[in-house]
Image (cartoon, rainbow, N blue to C red):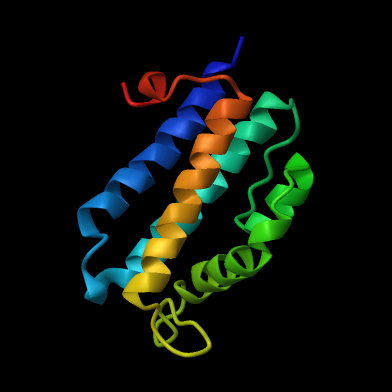
Length: 136
């Protein structure tokens, strides 16, 4: 049986996904989409760590969390690196969610959202959780 804390982490992840859905087509808000995407991925992986009975560290770096959860995301290394950089940069005015080439494009933002959704779905599947349970 999945622990309630796992479901709570996934609910928090889902809230980020729902926020993104409301703004996904607004080019002005692409740094916010990137931020919520990073947050959703982070929370999904923390749900997995709870499920694995591993310590859930108070860190935000997706790469580190992925390694701790032993989650194979080699195909997503570049997007993970970008989201980790955007999350850190969003904490400092002037660098607010900038990529090396500037603000994320709408296509970037949609790719980040798609990735966050993929990780959410993957963790739900690993934990054998019906997404409807998370959406309550």
